[in-house]
Image (cartoon, rainbow, N blue to C red):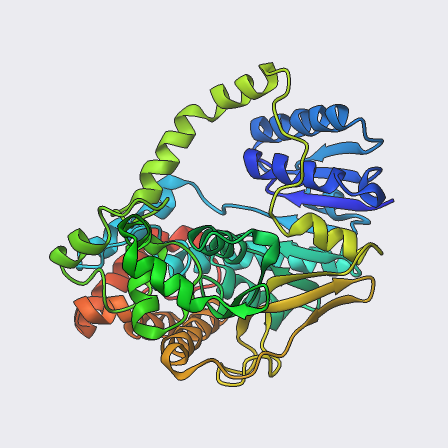
Length: 442
């Protein structure tokens, strides 16, 4: 019997989907599913909805719920982490303060000043979980979904001995989109994607064994609806020759080209039809709307006769768990330490590469070097985020400032003096949430 612990189980929609996926595998149907959250109300909804899915699936699984981390981790085989370390009242400053210095942010959960300060607050929480795993379930594997993925995984890889892989849906979501654009059945597509989380690149994309990248280029150039669907990513692809993962809105934050002037924001980040074109502070609006409606949505979910489809979704987690527990081996894109996997990214950096899961564990695939056209930006980003992790672990605010000074968008719109003032302001509003720092100015 497999014991699977969800840390941050109050992420209700995501938790429900993962529970459903887990129960689609025969060897996992009798699993013990342990729900843990620090919010009692959300935890109860998670427990009750898991019970409902178990009943709908007619599975012999059982559910436990606790607000105690040690209890949740005792004897776990798998630990799934989906936490949000602080509420909107804290992290909205990550987006609003940089705006005063010309840094226009769409999501802000991955990199740049917003992602770095989210990382500074979240790294201690993830290290607490990882160190508790070392004591309570040393043979367990953590599947981390919490952002900023690169910095959190890098900190845990450096400081703890746990088995760990970071998971994201950007690779499979983008590959499905590209297949749709060229009219290819997804089961006829094979690809190789590698880089760092939210900045990985499709190095190969084949349809029935033949290179389909020319078809993607043709679709973008000849079909206006497709050109408009992902304006930023399409522009990156046409310029750099490799298609990037994650949405246009996310990618518009990660480079020098799309958000440094109001006219560019209007041109590239406002009118696209994809799920996230790139509007300023979109994540704040989404979170505010969700906070006002999640209870009603949860009640409606419970009131529905069939509140969830029982077919497996496209998240990797359940297939990985099944493989680790002795089922069919499974290949996926995961975030792991760079032990020579990508030759021209920093050693030890957290990289996103193909990984095989099996009863023998997790085996990442050596990719080789990234192409020069995408390696420069990817390597710079990996290096500055490693510096930010160093600042987070050592409590050195200057390392944080220096990392932000090298962030492409920040450097494109603000001077070093302005960035120093911004970093000091961000430290000032985050003092109580950064226990690892003794000094709060650069």
